[in-house]
Length: 281
Ligand code: C2E
Ligand code: MG
Ligand code: MG
Ligand code: MG
Image (cartoon, rainbow, N blue to C red):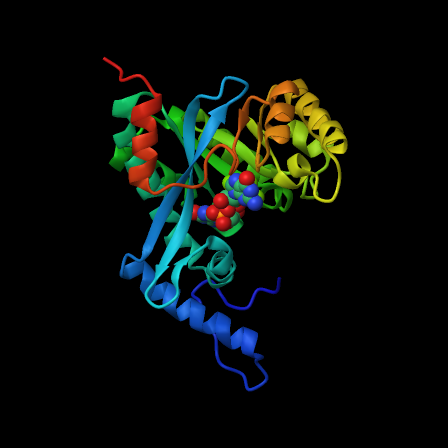
């Protein structure tokens, strides 16, 4: 994907721009306003321990409550946010809101919150400061925060990425490698990464176009790999009973997917917590 705008998002219209480009410019303008109008909202998808099936946390997933187009999924605007630099304030908002929500949920028992971090966000010189600020203002225990990064974040500048990950972990934060298996990182890089959790991309769990048997081979290999690097392993995209049985049998530590629960509103997530976790004294 071509970078179309500078970090400040300034871009001039060119007569040669296609309608797709013009649409992106519209999205960017609207998104800039969405941030100040508080049109962004978070949904929370439960994360379950495997094989037990208890809820251990939630992944925060951003949505845009668009004034005319309804609730938009991140696929409709994260790319534009990343290209325009808007992902920086957007990501800071997500971190703050997710930590605030998770801090409130601790009253019902220990629960983790996973937050997706984009490459540009991770590369900001004050990223660590933004994370600390979200923790401090919410009062959330850093041990309950999980930052999800994709291989693309790490692959460009592995040395500085590793250093920053170590600083985050020193605070007690856990790091998850998201969509694992779809990127280009080598096994030798993976071995050097200070990663706590590998999230197996749903394309392997579901084995698009394949069979349960070939999913078994791929997931099995990744579980062995993760455990030999002393990482926990989470299976994404569990949609069928067959996939559920498979990820449990193969030794995944955690699981997520529509079969178990879809992303929920904050109220629905809280209701789930209240009914499934014992209330701590
Ligand atoms: P992701 O982090 O890999 O999140 C998982 C995505 O898969 C979510 O889509 C979730 O709703 C969907 N999903 C969960 N279980 C299933 C399943 O069983 N089947 C299928 N087909 N899908 C499932 P969503 O919410 O549309 O988010 C898409 C992507 O957008 C995320 O992928 C993440 O990369 C990005 N994203 C979401 N929120 C944020 C954010 O706050 N910041 C950044 N930088 N990226 C975000
Ligand atoms: Mg994620
Ligand atoms: Mg993922
Ligand atoms: Mg994914």
